[in-house]
View 1 (tube, each protein chain N blue to C red):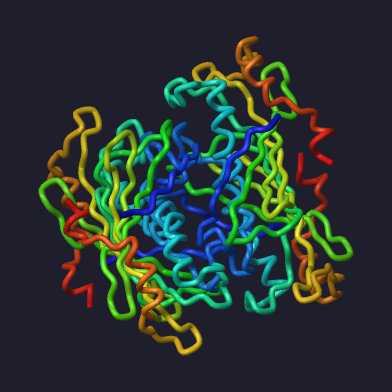
View 2: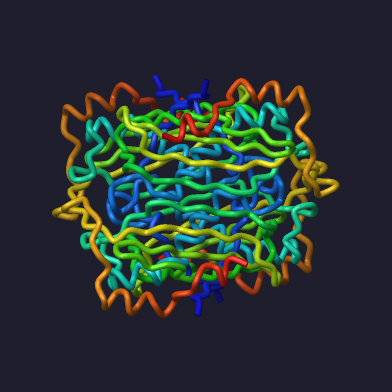
Length: 137
Length: 137
Length: 137
Length: 137
């Protein structure tokens, strides 16, 4: 199962080549990860924030254009002891145009160290779990 | 009548003060103006683009936060001979938090000059026309 | 006197019309206001932050392009009891292409109210003071 | 040898956790790649544009803050037949805080296919060539 979010490209997302600029994509993926952030922090409260982003990678497969909505599909591709990997795709006009992976770490900002993912958070995350070898095709 | 669009704030829209940063707002307003751009250019085709943005102003009335959706309400507050003024508001939690005005000019990029708004485009725009003295209260 | 800052446009700042997108400008102006923020908060420390942005307006006079640096000129156009107005211009190729005004309020976030600008901060700000009727021509 | 560019963080680059948001980094890296774009297209002319971005990855090693300038160091880590890999780092306060790789492809937009990198462009690029195993430590 994946989480689906529709995004309307805005005029300024398009660059001089007439397609969505590459720097726009991490923001769209971030926007679609709110549902994952809510698993860790239901009120999205900054004073209790407990996640840090360690890494992302994005592959630009096909160009995205201005005049149609974009669907962001968000999966969880791996759950480790204290970290997780999110796999996301951007679709437009029935084509997968971009794919990306983001590594998030469950983190205690006061102690400045990673902390294990608790069973109850893990259970919530597993709803969106999908093995990356299935979805990366 | 106004055009309504819902926006999900993303993590990076929030600045060090814990609210939506002011530089985010022109992008949200731009995104919500797509319906106006379609009145002038139904396919949103760059090669036929016929609008230029001359000016905007934004008033920040109340803070906007991360954990709730934001509704952008878009009105047309004035239609001139070759230009129009768009009035927009951002609402969250039943409060009007931001308001702004944008001036767009119907423009011929080849001749580099403004051109009158045709009767058929004017008719489409009038659907969203609202006198600014009514909505600016 | 004004504060000058040079900015290198990046590829994604350019939109489908081949010029710098309007939503980019509030960010460039914000970047150039750091010297004003330092008058109020020399270490730029968020826990002591004491300014809130109430309003901005931007006029797009000429198009800005990708292949040349942009100079942002920052003046203080008015100092009130607890607020100030910043006037800024973007220059490229010896032409003033954009101008804008921003209203900042000296603000106590704990008490959630505006506070007077102290004489020592006022003295620092006056270095960049320029009457807006002189610079708005 | 690397290309060095200094960037002044702006207020809105900082997120609710008090450090530079992850989505900011691809833009800073893009800004610093202008010198590479000029090797392929000295006038940075969109009508002759001949590069497409295929992929990027970014590792967030240490947090970046608001109150100090950031140095972006740009190397070319690999030159292939028609593509190249750019390796970049963000430094603040004598620490390497972020590192990233971007793959660019020399591309003919009319024919929609990749094209070999000519010897004269290759010679320009080699000025910044650095084997990635040296710089990735």
